[in-house]
Amino acid sequence: MRQTVLNAWDLLETAYNTKIKDQNSDIIFDKNLFDDCYDYFKQWRELIQKKYMKDPEKELDRHKIAAILTISIVQSKSIYYNNKISNNQIFIGLQLLAVTCGLSYMQDELNKILIENGYDPIDKYDLPIPFSCDTNYLEVIARNLYYQEHGTDLSGKKVWTFNPLDLANEYFLIEYITLIKRGIPTDTFLLKDKQK
Image 1: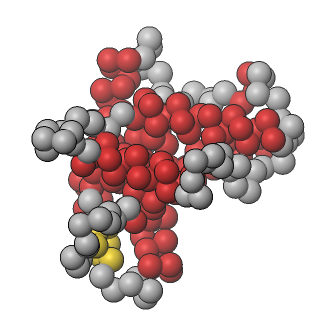
Image 2: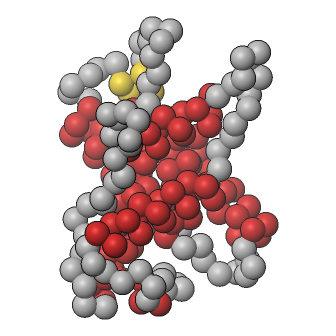
């Protein structure tokens, strides 16, 4: 699994170097935090396997791995805004990139299965469109991750925490919507992860 996290980290670094670094010098990527990210990943993976899975020796599915990757990248704090942000704004750049990395991993794994079973690979996920606002759904997920880490009640007491199982379910539903829109059967055993 170290290679999986390293691949996501490489994607994170590439996205930073090609899309962010030159556009905003106040956004910093600390690539030296890979080991922190990997440690978080291992902790989450072990917790979910041993505490929540019927068979703790069985590898987690792509949705859970993608969620754990996402949250581990966020926890590493590897991308941050190196300037003052006004009180009514939040920086969700790290969360956005983490979600992108998680979904990319999940898409790669799904495409392997689709190709192996004679289906065309997907080039992107069909994300839900929020009814109540114009916010892109990736930003909704990223904002929710930010609030899971920083959310407090009115007195300032922390009220939320990261929940990789909930995020995995959200990722599953995104994949499910995409498969339905593409006419790919969702009730087939062919779309289940193979055990490695």
